[in-house]
Length: 427
Image (cartoon, rainbow, N blue to C red; front, side, top):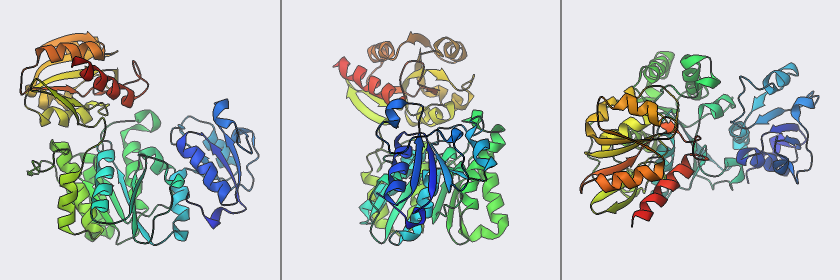
């Protein structure tokens, strides 16, 4: 567990007791802080020493209110309540930033972007380990960072950072900061797309001059952030990742498709900034196994490849998957985040047939039917059975839904597991 003498004797309120919130409570208490914790779930509150809703507390003298990234600060009253006492609203990543001074000498890589964060985070962590560098992946991936044991001297903390997590930190000075892309997402939490992009840009605003900044410039918002960084006097810190770079990805089985070309280039640049030798980077790229639910090759049945890309929860994240395979039976649908699939259009020519599922089944069928054969399958299990029956050797059955999962599943992981189960049942 990561602890800090900086928290000793101070008072904190913690709102939201999922994984990161509970880890924050334990780290603060272990450091000698007084903590008042709250969650709407009675089960989550059970067993904690001091339980109190921070909205009912006089926060005078508190060092901070620690909230879960899932708490919508633009709508939740905690932001105004804390502000009335002059108390900052922070997250577990800010606590980690505050604790860094007491940790063995280390570096931090922060990765953000609408799509590709998890793969790039896991890839950088894997390359570090391949090179013999002690590394921990955390933040929006894996276990909460505060719940992990500190790394030895020379270690690298590799943090996947959502915009929500960036919103809740003010002092995270990343030795290497990576922005992959920015496309419309989570707009219910921001004052339009500009507010969402501004949240991503804060990762670089917190950096010291001389620390590496790596930015994908394939979209206008990210390119604008790169220009602002260059004109601010940090051009020597900046590495730009251009879209459409031709690369030989044949040696990297888990990194196929143009989106993974960008992820790989960003990871290479980050690892070079860390001082890792090229030979170790090459070994890491070749041996990376990928992540579950992200272009995951589940099985090959009678010459047909089955790929689980359940993490593709918006059209922009699905688009690269459609370009990664030649002839695709595309399972698409769920709880739609947008009312169009235009971001996917460049890959339509690769689709042999689409199988629509979930709440968006009918609307997506109407959108796609002028461009390709479409079957309204309704359920994921029915779509897998039908696609498997129609696919020919050399073709791919691809679950890349371009939608959230909550209409039929608990989360994208549950949807991906249901796909695996349906493929397994074919045998």
